[in-house]
Length: 182
Image (cartoon, rainbow, N blue to C red; front, side, top):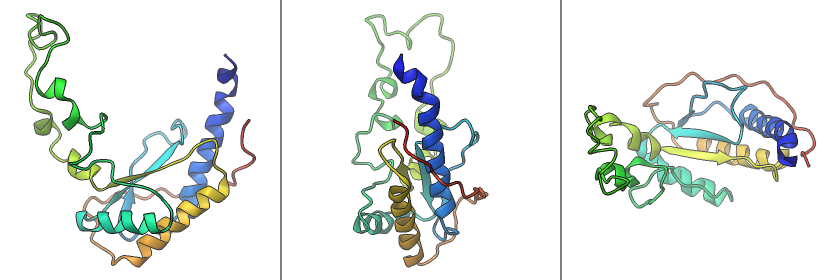
């Protein structure tokens, strides 16, 4: 119950960190920001960039790692991340949750199952070009500045590539994070 009384303060702090990070970013040459449809309602615990060209992903990751920002693309064929649909073997193989094969063999189910790759043909390509920068309550504005500076440095070092999925860039204000919540 104590946590519930602190959640608004904590979310406000994370949102301030996120806005601070965005305000420090230079105009990107080789990536665009993942769209957030509810900036004010978003928890503020991360920012995801989508790199324009698959050929730049490994260079981005290596460059950020050199700058002490440990990261990787959200999806890699070698990854077993349970958040990515290719690892949902129960769904892909239509394995039921019980001996009757529910929900796939439920006589009331009239839907047509289509493979997830059919329904989401671009998803893995986008996720393999996506890198997330996470924020936590243990961070302060200096941590956020280090991450933003590293991203700016790596992006500016790489040869600009044509953007494969243009997205409008948000114009964040320059909020200053305040003290960390307790």
